[in-house]
Image (cartoon, rainbow, N blue to C red; front, side, top):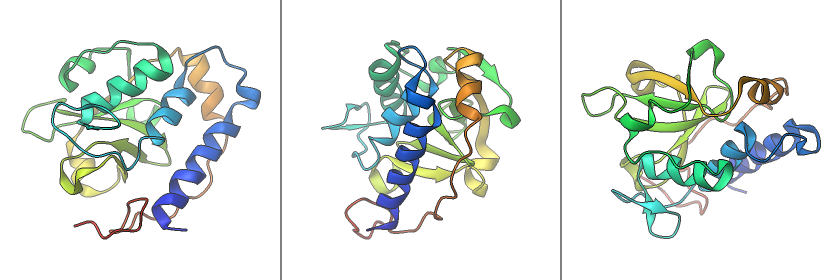
Amino acid sequence: MHAGARTVLLLMAWLALALPARAQTAGGSADLALSVIALVGSPYRPGGEDPVSGFDCSGLVRYAARVSLGMQLPRRAEEISRAGSPVQASQLQPGDLVFFNTLGRPYSHVGVYLGDDRFVHAPTQRGQVRIESMSQPYWRHRFDGARRLVPAATAARFAAAPMPALPAPTPVDDLWGRDTP
């Protein structure tokens, strides 16, 4: 099995087991994280908002929030950055939204935090939704902040589950084992 596929399966299994019997009410951080992980490998498309034709960063987050939380978020990453409540980087929990300055302006890129310093997003480079490490210098230097869309009590229950070790991302990180530039 390809390393990227193993990463996705490990994360999905961990998320499914993190909340015993999915005891939370409909929606919540686990649902948002599961929804976005399921979209890894979807194509990138500017202005895209669906898994078939592709996503841009805000379209990915909007789609996952609508499917998992029933929330209708604004269209642009900068507008989404005002939804929910602010979260300190040291308090990040799976399902939190993470924002970056990638276009020379604050909050120009958004993704969903998974835990273990990883997030899912739809970058233009390499053209597909993927998992990245926030500790990579590119992302670490561009981090603008985070927001939580679910109540703190729901997110705290999820954060209590230990996360398994994940394999390191590789340059060949699509689900079909293709070399990606």
